Length: 292
Image (cartoon, rainbow, N blue to C red):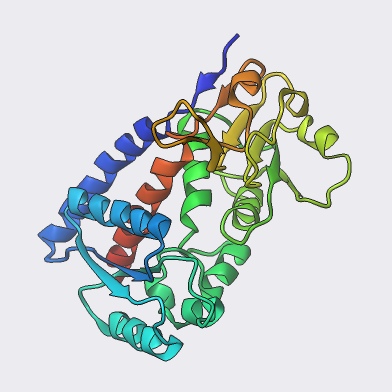
């Protein structure tokens, strides 16, 4: 039997309607949530990501501002711009598009964003709150994964979740989120990485398998048990001479073959990606609500 497709676009559209109601309530109180995006350099992928985020702001009726800085900008100049955004009452959320050029220390930049405006959830204060199970801004991609699982009717509590990848952006925060003792989590979580022994044996025991390892088609059918739920976070370009662009985008999971065994699976594209942007919007709205 073919797996149920967990449609990120459809779930994101439902969430967008919920967010529009929250935005309307804020506007009735004279508040328009505002997001500032900081883009350093001319990285094409980064520019596309920022553009898509600002486009969604406009679609939802949020205030948005894009700060564009040259590739050779000094760290001090960038920090000055961030301090100004911290003090700007129109701005409720700030994101700095990564990666940054080599002359700028990523850690210093992230720590310079006011925690109450850190809608990416990367600031050490918000990371600490996440680990403690306190109210905070949750990183957008893990939040999107969790929402997709829940909104698909998949039970998380008591399930064995295996996460492939231990990045600070996806794997580690998602492990913390799903292991917490609350109705939306409460799972037994195994976090795997490149040095994990007997990897296929571990993944084959997963009720829910999350692939965030950054390698095209890494997860094969032999690594997945029958009836598992598979969440593919990977975005990889592979050569495709039949495509006008010369490539196509695939995930970390061999979608066709794993889809024959899994109970449910996310596609790439059209899976986790749309939810990541929507969770950024939700964090921005939440930042505005908290300021009331």
